[in-house]
Image (cartoon, rainbow, N blue to C red; front, side, top):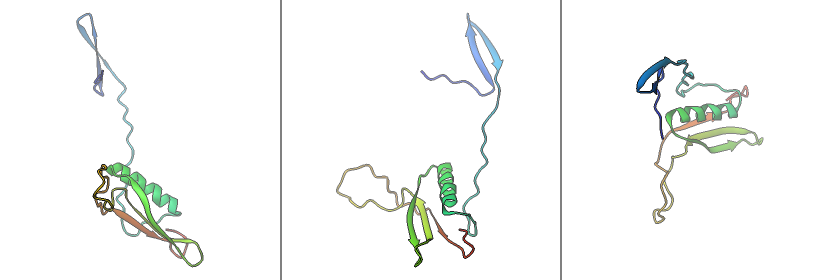
Length: 117
């Protein structure tokens, strides 16, 4: 059984009489993330992933690490994060629920000479 209670008042029924009392009207408001844009700088690659996952969650789309590349020295140089719905299903003959919608949303990052992303 689902009970609906307005945010500012609660109604209680007692012997046919309706009694209203005021509730504490505190709402948890998180600051809105800014949209990804060219030139954003992060200290480590994990900060990029955390930011893009939070941004994707705000939009309602899950995020995955799509690709990453290392340089000749073995250090991570490039990384791409994408929507989990990116790409197309490989098999058209299997009857599975399709989660791939060919979504084009992605974020690419490269390490700068100063070590920041």
